[in-house]
Image 1 (tube, rainbow, N blue to C red):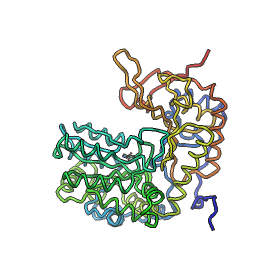
Image 2: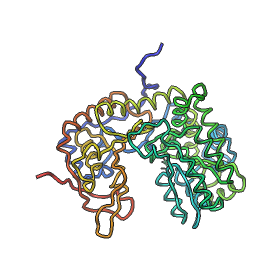
Image 3: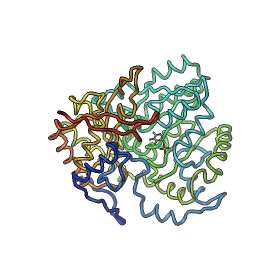
Image 4: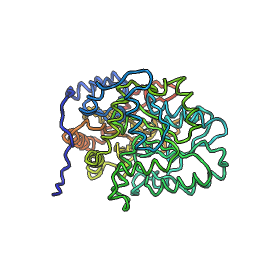
Length: 461
Ligand SMILES: *Cc1c(COP(=O)(O)O)cnc(C)c1O
């Protein structure tokens, strides 16, 4: 029997109360936070869609694992359990725990980077790019053209442009390529998946030129489910087996376990090459910790090992991908402009198209972020000119290419009725479209200004 309602494949054992607030209260909270939702206290938020990173709910098994954690400095049984799980998945022998994804990136890319080196990715995530550029190397993004067009349908908008890849390797010289990095799913490109066909082509090009291929595998399970759904020859292959095949194409992998390993903190770095692993080991010991714990407690590794098994449950993955697209598809049907099709972990609203009368230098994305909070207590994240805008010599804004607002969905945290509520808030957003106000920045730091900038609304006369 195939029913159309997909239920949450879990029951709730522990609850975290949400404090219900009024519009009047939220007005005061937002003003106090200087119209920057990063500066709100979390208890002032009803539905928190700021990020899916480290915000998952752990299972009863994971919590039980926390009590089983072996906190021995060396040779912890929790490390061995984590090693076994990751080895079975990746086939990579050298596995190091790190405190989160960027720590693994720093180790690997500082070793392979440096002045004169080039890294090529479908899209480098911001911490990946920062670690590469900090080493003195350059980072080039070559997602397929469809990946840059919000409304154009393509089943695998995260794919890498293989023609450009081959051209770049020849142009720069294979010896000068630090690594090629496939980000699955492509977080900065809307959480869009990469196909196995594309991964195979990228791998073949890298092998031909003797260039390292790494997987930024934060959302490997979600990506595998998309392959199972959309790539004909994989429809009868398990999501886990699909992940195993994708890892087999690569020389190494970095994972922020705060995503698909269903834990609140953690990550790992895995490589196949012994020599490279030795260099990684030295850096790891200097800054993260001994090889059998990296930056983690035994209990963290225990929960990570369990989460990395749970995430490949087909029932969970189906619920995860379908529930994210349920929200996106409903908003789409209401006429909310967004990145289409819906990715794995988030819905990205096109605020420039939603608020055509707010000029880009008045930050339509930030305006929508504020409206979502005021009208519904929903916290979202601007991914537009607040995050990526720059100034020219006359202090005029050079805007980002898109003004997006991301609704990132934490894993196993919200239920269907929370999502119905969010959809209703968007109905209100449409009704009050004309009342949305532009924003101006009153104070800003030099770097990563979205985190701490202060704003003021520009009310219409
Ligand atoms: C989150 C993320 C990272 C960085 O991981 P942290 O755990 O936040 O340090 C790297 N790459 C991608 C694709 C990510 O989503």
